[in-house]
Image 1 (tube, rainbow over the protein chains, first blue to last red):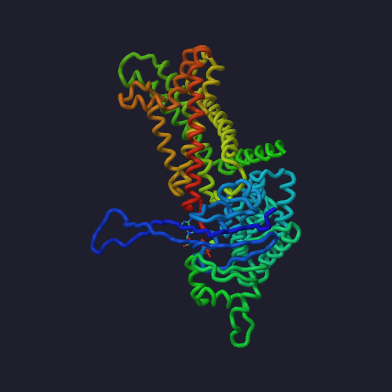
Image 2 (cartoon, chains in turn brown, purple):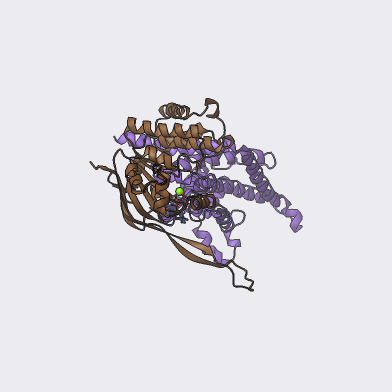
Length: 283
Length: 276
Ligand SMILES: Nc1ncnc2c1ncn2[C@@H]1O[C@H](COP(=O)(O)OP(=O)(O)OP(=O)(O)O)[C@@H](O)[C@H]1O
Ligand SMILES: [Mg+2]
C-alpha cells in the first residue's frame, strides 16, 4: 500500500489565453485586437503529502494554489509531470481517484433554486451513496456547522454567502473522502463559523484519518491546522516546512514573535499592502 | 462486489433524473412558456394546411395537408425535446456553475447519459402527449387507420439517434462556456430544415438531398407518416427501424468518443473553471 496520499512529480501547467491589445493609435478597427498569451501557473512542482497529514499551501493571488488543487481533483490535466493519489494516476486512473477525494472551493456553486438538501442529495447520488443514510449524514453535518434546520429546505439563493459556503463544506465532507482538497474553505465566513469549520476539519482528521490539502489566505488558520506548509510564489515552491520551522527562518522584528504572516511576506517578497491590493483586484 | 458497483451506477444515473425533475419544478414558469411556444408553433404550422385553399384559390384536399403537417409538427416536437434535454446536460451545469463538481464526481459519462436519456424520453413523451391533446381540440386527427404499434417502435428507434445528436450538441457548452448552449439552436434549426418535417425532402434544392438523407430525422418522419397516415404494416417498417437503430448506435458511439476527447481538451485548456 502506498504511503503517500498525494504525490506531485515535476508538474507543469500552462494556460493560454487571449489578451486584448490596445488598437494602434488613431486607427479604427472593427474587431478587438487580441493576441495569445501564455501563463505558466505551475513551474515543475514536486510535492509529497504523506497519508493522514494536513498540508497547507500558502501563496499570493495567482500563484497557482487553485491550479494545484484542480490538478489533484482531475479537473485539469498537467502539461508534463504526474500526480498520483494513493498511488492512482490522476490522468489515467481518474475514476479511482474521484472515489477517494472531494473538493471544497471558494466558489460555492450550487443549483440556486434547489434547497441544500436537494443539492446535497444530487451530490450523494453522484457518489453512489444510499439515500436514507446520505440524508441523515447531511443533516448531521449541516447542523454541526451551525446551519439552522429551517434553512435545509429553502432555496439556496436566499442564503447568505457564508451560509452557502457552509453547505459547500458539507458537500465536501458528505462523501467521506480520504483526501480532502480544501481551496480557501473558510473565505467569507465570520470568525465563529470559521472556528466551526476548522474544528470540523480537525475532527474529521481524527475520526476518519483523512488527509487534507488546504489553501488559505488566513495565515493563522494555516498555522493552526497544518502539519506542514508550502509557500508558493509564481508557480514555484519557495519554502516547505512545518509552521515552527518556517517561522524560525524569519528573524523576529522589534522583539515580537514571528507570525505566519511575517513568513508569508518575507518569503513571497511582497509587502502586506501589496498582497491586500492584489487580493482586492484578484477577488 | 459486482452488484454494489451496479447499484452505485444506478444511483448515479438517477441523480440526473431527479435533478432534471427538480429543475422543472423550480423553473415551472419557463416550462409553461416553452409549452405555449411549442403549442402555438404546432398550431400555426398546421393552419397553413387549412389556409391552402384560400392561398392558392384552388380546391385542395385540406384534410390531407393538415394531417401531413400535424404529424410533422408533433414528431418534430418530440424529437427536438429529446435533443434539447440531452444537449442541456452540460449547459445547466454551466449556467449554475456546478460543472466542476459534477465532473469531479465518480460517475462515468455513459451513466450520466443513461440518466439524462431516461429523463429526456419520459419528458418528451409527456410534453408531446400534452400538445397532442390540446391540438386535437383544434384539428381532427383521424388515426383510425394508423398502425400505432409500428409508430411507437419507429419513434423509439428514432429517439436513439436524437440522443446521439444531443450528445454532439452537449459538447458545445464544454467548449464555449458562454454561448455554447445557444449554438444548439442552430443545430436544431438545420435539422428541421433538411429533414422533411413539413415538406417532402424532394422539395429542397438538389444539392441538399444527400445531406437530408444523412439526417436520421428524415427517416423517422417518413416512417411515422407511413404508420400514422397510411397505416403501413409493421413488417414493412422493419428495414427503416433497423436503419434508424444502426444510425442511432453509430451517432451515440461517435458522440461519446467526441465527448471524451472534448472533455480531455477542456481539462487541458482549463475550460471547466468558472471562477476561484
Ligand atoms: N482555467 C484557467 N484559464 C486560464 N488561466 C488560468 C486558469 N486557471 C488559472 N489560470 C491562471 O493561472 C494562474 C494561477 O491561478 P490560480 O487560480 O491557481 O491562483 P491562486 O493561487 O489560486 O490565486 P487566488 O489566491 O487568487 O485564489 C493565474 O495567472 C490565473 O490567471
Ligand atoms: Mg485560488
